[in-house]
Amino acid sequence: MDHTTEQLTTLTENNTGRVDREKIETAITMLLEAVGEDPSREGLLDTPKRVAKMYEEMFSGLHSDPKEYFKTVFNEDHEELVFVKDIPFHSMCEHHLVPFYGKAHVAYLPKDGKVTGLSKLARAVETTARRPQLQERITSTVADAIMDMLSPHGAYVIVEAEHMCMTMRGIKKPGAKTVTTAARGVYETDHVLRNEVMTLLKMD
Image 1 (tube, rainbow, N blue to C red):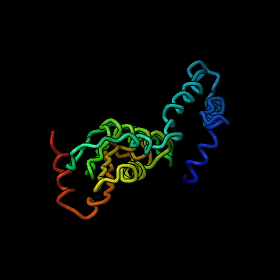
Image 2: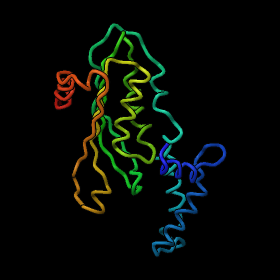
Image 3: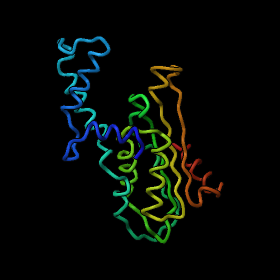
């Protein structure tokens, strides 16, 4: 766990491992005061509670391991490409605590007929995204979880996202997309297999 995530975990957890909404409400109230707002005005009265509830949902992945979804496997006579594309996700940039969102595309090449449920790939993406994150880390974490738990010939994960820290502040370039990839196993060196995934990705 990196330092930033460790700090946030300490801030938002109580002794039971659940999000401490009271601490979040206090922090949001202080934040509103710090920027010159009046937390007691009508429009902001329930804002700390709303934000606490939202953070509980958005950061729920802090207490989950995406590898858990790949413990359920099936033995099928299938060693061809498995590819789930256009998995929507949203996450929170750990540098500025503003959202980024987009789609993930997850492919793997089963070995010895060992496959998992298709929904598990989507759930792994969702769980990985629901914490203070970097897009690069989401991409590599999902690929590594597949390799560790399914032991396939290879895995290839592609993530494309728009970052509000580029849209709302700084360079202010709405619509700019960031694409990250993680190639594992045979996909690290086999350009033909990677091209197969990219061709399918472009198909409607």
